[in-house]
Image 1: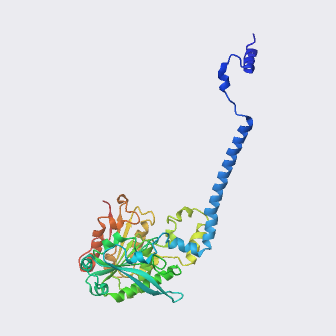
Image 2 (image 1 turned 90 degrees about the vertical axis):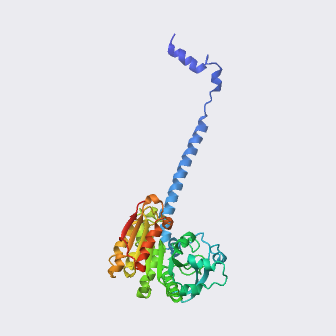
Image 3 (image 1 turned 30 degrees about the vertical axis):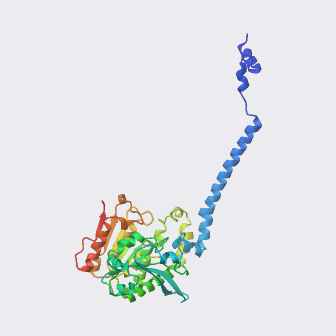
Length: 382
């Protein structure tokens, strides 16, 4: 018997295959084709959406950003989700502070804007004031033996966001913290660098009229550039005793290549044309490396090596530039750079929490009380 015919017979008739063959189901050709079509359509749709998203994010958005001043302002002066209720700033549960609204003149319109400001008492004075509802804050500021610290906060913050840091400051100082225009419950105004620096200059002058104590300035992140520009504009009139720059950057154009909101665009061939140049054209320069040459007081640079927002090498560059200033050698000798090891996990915001920070700060302060200061540059590796 022909075996081939035998096999063909059973393949055709399925004899002796038993009841098992009843359970075998074959997908109809029509259903199989429909499934393939659905998969192909889904794949095409996914790719199309991905391409569309790419075009929107990396092409359309940069082009819109290039011509939108409001978007540029929102990138530079981020204020999403910040507290704006004046009542919160006036009755916050924080020991012994007083809330003020300081008038400043707008640079362009000469209109008056009011900026929210806190005066926080040093610990020793706070103990005397805590049960005294008539405590005279202005007299304390005018006649106290304590020095005064003016704090410039970073973007994306208001004056209520750094309460623990203020507790650190008040060990040494009367602490003055304020909100830039459009931040917190400060009045809104055109958000341009030159306008805000002009506001800061007036806040500094207001403070000078309130006290004859030694004045220190502390800036964080964007606040470092605003602080440096303010002192640069004031010149010798500032009479600042010491400047502390925490997480400082050299210029905004250079910082854009590392900024967490922008760095994913830097590989684009049109990044400089659509992002960097429009910001520069509209005056968002923040050229700290330029203005720091006009600062005449000692400077303490603080930066965490693991800072993912502002790279630490920028503080190193600023330190080197500051050593080229046309100032007394004593000022240069007391200008210091402290880098915090990445294992400490201090990142962009938490340098003040490190146990050693108070010693670095005290070492910087010792110069102004007649004690010698240690080496200029150090790195906290513990």
